[in-house]
Image (cartoon, rainbow, N blue to C red):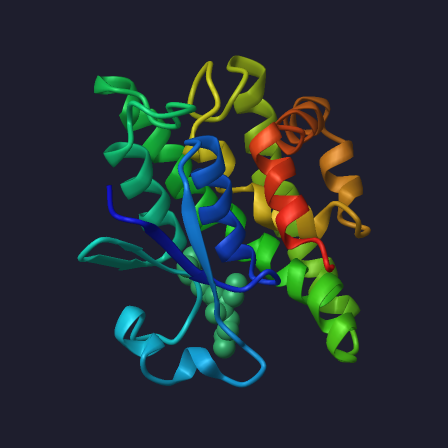
Length: 214
Ligand SMILES: N[C@@H](CCC(=O)N[C@@H](CS)C(=O)NCC(=O)O)C(=O)O
């Protein structure tokens, strides 16, 4: 088997998504550090891996991929016989796909905006915009109302087992849970229990250990 390579950076939440998937699948991989401060991702040779100049990028032999959610889907399908399944064979996969889309199209735009306002901007010395936070907290709350209803019907978003539809949320949750946004999750019992469950998975704990500032 060719060496799997993840090109990324420990502060990148999209990189964490791919790492979580690799640890769930119990696959060996090489982590290639991309120096975002020096703009390594905006120059060759990185642009040959992702022409948009964003991390992560991924290599499996001759195959080169970017976009974290496409990478996780490739890994889950290609290495179906390893580790946690993460995808479901047959018709039920359609429901998992629906909730992967919900994460990307409904949840992530609100979560990412709040992540920048409340977690990233303070690190960069940029003032948090309270009006933006209020607007996006409202948007996130509406999405989480739908999650609360869904998680009252099934243990996980895609069905009865943990799949990529759940895993894709872990990076933004990790940035948001130490902020004031936590109250929006905590106000919804099913959502709150789901966050606690998926955040304590051993594979995710390995990601947290790996990205911990040394
Ligand atoms: N949709 C992309 C997002 C990639 C992305 O935005 N990466 C960020 C880090 S999380 C990045 O490379 N930022 C550097 C920059 O914008 O210059 C994915 O999921 O892979």
